[in-house]
Length: 324
Image (cartoon, rainbow, N blue to C red; front, top):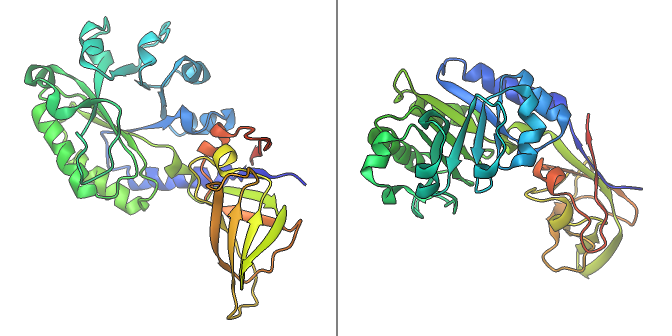
């Protein structure tokens, strides 16, 4: 019995189609899919067919998507060394001022990656240049700005910062935002983007780059009980033949309890990986099931990043990944 992760392409496609339908009034909006989130060719073809461009951070990612002739947002320290060949539709976002100034690229093909100076109102990305450290003459000439916010839920604070960019960057053409927006409901995301879109001038576009958001409810893990350990009354540790660190990167797995016979004596389970590492906690909760060795288990909320990070770790095998 082997563990595996299954991603339903039909769910991913439905997530995309719903978003496209709800944002069709945003005529200045373009969408990018980050290759680092999932480099499977079936998935990349799907996003291309839906009109997406791609976000890349190195030569290997470029090689995966350059045949699509889509718009490319290049972000990260290795991007300045990418072999561009005959690419026409791209922007390289630099992480420091000198790389931006010394770049031989035309101003329409280069920009800056910024951060918001550890603003306590929302999570901070360590990438990029603190926005308040950029000289005014650079801000007034620059055409392309990119930033990334991880796990942000405080949309009003973020929107305020974005309005500041639009106001100060007089020649802005592209505002490229990435980050962990998967916690937002579709309508919340549409409202957020509409607010920004309404501030843009006719010659400006808004680019959104996100990965996990499109995989909502699409990924499941199937594995089995390696062993069971009682640690207290109605409390057990379930060891699984996988690793949170090696196989389930950036996922927050939830055990699917299919027992219809509800009772008052639910058992509290801790699902641990088999790495002999105390932090290898995969999931926990109270469920009706009485789990036993070799029982087949199903978990939801699996991130596509799990497939990209999937490694053999401390003797734990890679998980099979299926896109069906």
